[in-house]
Each structure stands twice: as structure tokens, then as C-alpha cells.
Image (cartoon, rainbow, N blue to C red):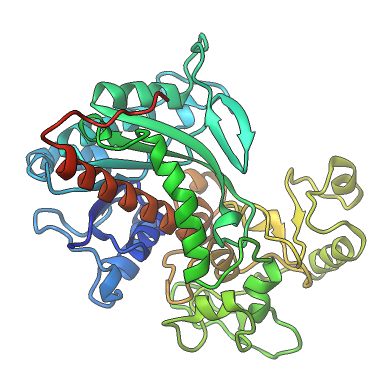
Length: 439
């Protein structure tokens, strides 16, 4: 059977695309407006040196460069419409800051335009399924086995982003359901909860017993199969993930990354000693990319050493503890070696190494996100000031990414659902449709 094809919108550096590719799918093209993030994406998943099983096909009508979704629609909408019937999955969800309840809601936030443009691409391409990640503002009904269903009762007076998006996608001809997933249950060494929404085209939903909810039943099967196939447990600790990357007593070498200024150092990895480390080393030889160590001042290292010696690990520092160490940052999290890491964010100094007085390297952060060592990150390592809103350096690329192992399992589940509905369509196409469970 030919590989299922997908498009990735708002792709970032490629975590979701890599995961879907690991699930056996084939990417056609991706849309990402930031040039640094797209450089990373293209280097690993598009250009000639990318591993063949994961290399995007890429159409001739779309230049291989950073694109805004509005640009693609303006210049290539007829080409998008020509893809109808040829694309199985449209992956990636629109940024949603303007609709979020986490801060002040700004209805005319220009980023809300991306929400409308996303739906416009869905209507143009008409894929069989949609995969969206990190959708906030949902109403939680109940918690069971790390999955939270979305409340289906009366709508709040002010609609959340998800409700606006789901309503627009329903108008476009899709049934959508979202659940809260913990990435650590999928072999990702990180406690990272993310809301995942799946959409199935309405005319196809009738052939899926249980409708779109069936995808999340299949996701649990895919999760168990993935852990078996990758020889992982659903609990990979931070030390199991990055212990081979610690400095220890080894001498440091100069960082030779062409995109790093001089004066930085890195450590050569030890031999892999856990199944997860062996898995991450596959297809990688020598020292991985992005191993550059931060240059901490002596007083900063001393403060970090005191925190590691005196504060509980695996617990976010509270206000009193931060004040006692003269820290103004809101989030400081000393990792525990025996537990999955906390959520990796776009700010490198949010998390401290579990045994060394320093922040994590980009590669260590990527390991905790489940990026393999062969995946190379491009662009600046960090940025600051008002450039944070305009640039996407390596730490930001990693923090924004969908963990590839989570994406792999989601891809497997969606593929199983599409296989199932196509099989039912062939078997029962001449008779009555399947009874689809109410959602």
C-alpha cells in the first residue's frame, strides 16, 4: 500500500513532521514562516542529505523556502485545490495567542488571521484527516487515564479558541475531537501535557464505528505497540535519556559549530548505556550537533550548585525559594535524574541539569523532546530582548516542537483509523452506513 501523504502547516523545525514520517507517512510540503526554523526543517527533511525514508517529496510549484500561510494562499491557491483527493492528512495547528484565555483576549489580534487562513487551506485541500497540536482554552469535563475529554455541554458566553476552530472546521465539513495527552506515556522522557485535536472529514466519519473518537481508542493501541517496537517503557527518566551527554570528568573541546561565535565549549558523549540512548544514537556518528555548553559566570555556577544541593529535585522552585537565592525568574526547575524531565520550554534557563550546575544544551533539550541525534538544528542558539518575537533560535525551535515520539503514535493511530474506515467503506458501501456513536 502506498505511503499516506501529509502536509504540515506551521511546521516549526519539524517535530510533528518527523513523527509522522517515522510512522511511515510521506510528507509533500510544509509551511513555516520563520527562516531559522525552516532552515532546520529543510536540512533534516527536505534537502538531498535528508534520510530518504523521511525526505519530503516537495512539489515543483512551491519554492523550498520559508513561507507564510497567507503567501501560499495568495500565490498558490489553485495548486492547493489540485491536491484534493491526494492528501490524507493536514497536520499542524494555527497559533492561537489571540484567542487564548491565558492572557488578555484580543479579538483583532493579527495572529487571528492565521486561524482563518488555516481553515481556508483545509477547504482548498480537503484532506481526509486533520491533526492539530497545542490548542488552549478548552473546557475540561473529566480526567481518566491521562486523557481528558472536552466538555460537550453549553457553550460559554465567550468562545474559546478551540470552540471557534471546531465550529469553523465543522462548517468546512469535518468532525473534530480533542484530548489532553501526556507525552511521557509515549516514550518521551518529559512530562509534557498537550491538547491534541483530530478531525475526520464528515463524509468519511460515517464509515468509522464511533466516529472521530475511534482515533483515540486506536491511539492507545498505537502507544502500546510503539513502546514495544522501540523497546521503551512509558517511563523514561531524564538520566536514562541524557546521562551519556553529561560532562562528568571529561575534558572539554572547542565548539566548532559554524553558527556559533568562538569561545564556547562542548563535551564528547560517552557510550550509550540505556535503550533510549541507543535509540537516539541510531543513524548518528561522532558528536551530535548542538552540544554547545552555556558560558555561566562563576557566581551563577555557584548559585546553581547550591540549588542542586539544597532544593528538592523534580519540583518547581516556589516563590520563597527563588527569593532566597536572589532569582527573579518565575520558573526554575531543577531536574530529577530518576523522573521524566519537566516541560521543555523556549527559555533555556527554565530547567537546570540534575547533577551539573548549568542549564541544558540544545541537544539535551532535543533528546528530552525525543529528537534523534542525527537531527541537526540550525540558526542562532539563543536570542534576546525584542528579537524574541521575531526570531526562532535553536532553543526556541526545540521548545516549540511536537515531540516526535508523540507525533509518531498519533500518526500510527490516524493511519489505522483511515485504514479501518476505507475497509468498512469497501465492505458496506452498497448498504447502510455504519452506526456512528454520538460524541
